[in-house]
Length: 107
Image (cartoon, rainbow, N blue to C red; front, side, top):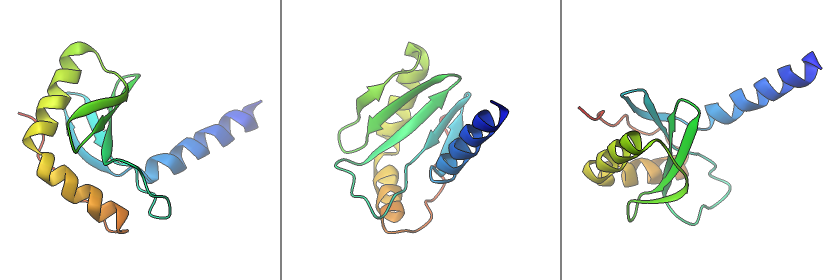
């Protein structure tokens, strides 16, 4: 049993390495998935807050899946609107196999 838990933890760590952290504010972590060999249909990012996750489309700021508590979700959407161009640039960099730039946190 311990081996199964350890293996699951290692797998999760491996996935997190493919999700570079773009920004962090008010306990919310913003990450983007990088998998250059697989073309995603739509530019997006993942936002994590405590045990909740939301996936947000960048081209037209909207929820693809999941959700955060209302206050945190509104903060993430506002932050995404402000930094939409930077998010699209980071998306392109990641899909080209390059490192993303950090994006300023919400203040």
